[in-house]
Length: 241
Image (cartoon, rainbow, N blue to C red; front, side, top):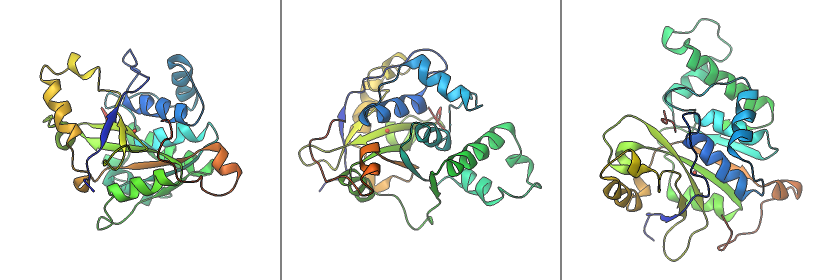
């Protein structure tokens, strides 16, 4: 089976500086979980947690926390050295200058809040790379999955930013389908967007090494076991977004 994904459109395009791919991925994931929420309401919910939107966007910890506040069971699997270092010194008041910035403090606070609210965080070993197989397995169990990719390897854009996608059940021979909030808006930022999108559609997921957020639907959680496998379900440093 090829480890390339298929594309489907997002229902959320978003507008404004505060509307980024982290919030867009959360909105799409919530929609798949049966919760429809508008731009202003979701942004207000995010700000009510005490966080701002940074120039780079929001971290995977913030995305996971935001979704957790809606009652979904959430697991964040992070390969970020930065988040790993922050979590490692979560109880140490003496941290390096690099880890004591306001952005770092906010990221650590988001992780702590996620765990306090019952969410889970894991930092797999670098040798345990994420894979298309792990994504397919999670989707087969009825999970909603958000994936973090970097701009250069995914779109061929030589810039230092990450982006969130939502993965959903596959069609035909692809391992899963991708909901990308940039699909229809990227052209306004990049003149050669059609070529970047072509590269994204041909992305080999065997090379992927980003964060992964698994979200269990509320109905699955209520039954205390995974949802049955499905192949036709409706519906992932971003500018981390």
